[in-house]
Length: 284
Ligand SMILES: [Fe+2]
Image (cartoon, rainbow, N blue to C red):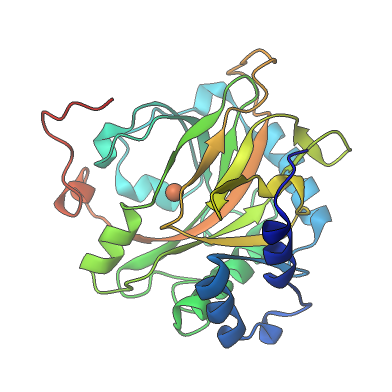
């Protein structure tokens, strides 16, 4: 396990809260904690057993035959249960952001195949409280052209990764649509790092940088914790278990849940109206 500075451990203590209901979440505490530390950890809202069971269901549901490529789908397809494998630089999205990951889109109006509906709804409410929106904004349906893209990211053993970066695609769309000027990403912790029975990988994992240190939150958090970090901090996913072989037939390795607000697009490549793809740029 990584050793962090005392300053970081203290910040983790100060920015962690345990509550048993969403009504106990105080927006002032949330905003002041994020202002001060750039991240926070919310415990107690999601039952770890729900996460354990969801992972079993995802592994059962996953089929390499259903795997769609990184791009080319119609936007409507993401608004239903949908599975894709993204390998490459992802330049089509408007920025060069190398990755190796799967995504299981699982909106709350689609069949609840992983048993995560309530967990996604609660996390979307946390997001809304954070943004100062109505608690139920865009949770059950499309609201004001935005919808909750509830989904699971899976970084496979044998090299699943997402290059370290700052967020600039979704925040740009949200800003240009006058939805919000700030961007925070709530993540449902679905995998732990280490060797005990809840651990899905031993090396690599999700991180964000704070006080100049790369903080691998899956070393210290528990299944079902909701981690929120600023999109302006550097974050990513370091190579998952490189000593294991990569097997595209299996959904193994690291899992994490997201409830990002996506703008409802009606045609292919509409995202490019908001984010200009890089042209003739040399990317190193
Ligand atoms: Fe990001």
